Length: 286
Image 1 (cartoon, rainbow, N blue to C red):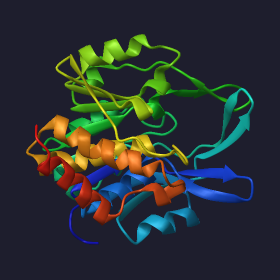
Image 2: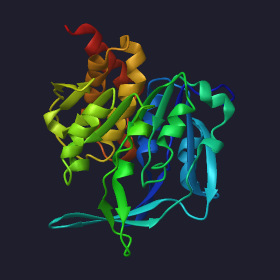
Image 3: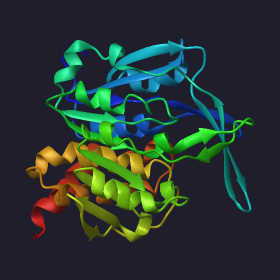
């Protein structure tokens, strides 16, 4: 693809270790395919091991800039009776402002999507590099640290200076279960905050003022990727609903709900599902 992307994603893909396979994952993977379903030209800046075969699943549908690394960011999830234990088995390099192609910097949509702390120190600088973009940060990847055994744990992150350059922040209530006060902190510190709450819907804060939103009720198959799909659908649909955040949230909730009825990257929406989501908002009363 030679034209400049409309929707730019920055963050690292992951290799997710399953019992009998190695699967493409990460916020950028789910979000990129969601934006593609909206008919957008997507540009992805990521880092992975040189020659990483998992990138072939994305290369044919978007513009790809890769920072070569010794290894791809790799997660292993172990499910126990008391819950999931997650390990970070490998970590790629840190994509930086210097790696962003000049032609991409006029994009109207920017999605900052770290997965394992790779953008903690550069969120503000990246957002500042896209002066014409509506910028969105998915926070989960800023909230991870590892111990000496590579086990993933929660860490707090709040950078007031960086967030001045970000228009929208999205995270799940599960992301901050160890520090629920972060919701109040972010609500007061960003223009638009959206906290998702799975089947309970969520809360959208505009200039600190909260308003709940519902989500369609469906049969859960697998929740992985739903938050990433929600965030990408929100940003991609915002321009299509006249900049109305609450209508964009309803489009995003519609597509995220349908995503949990499928597993893996197959949970990303089809163009027909995107159209149905947009139609449901356009035809419904305010």
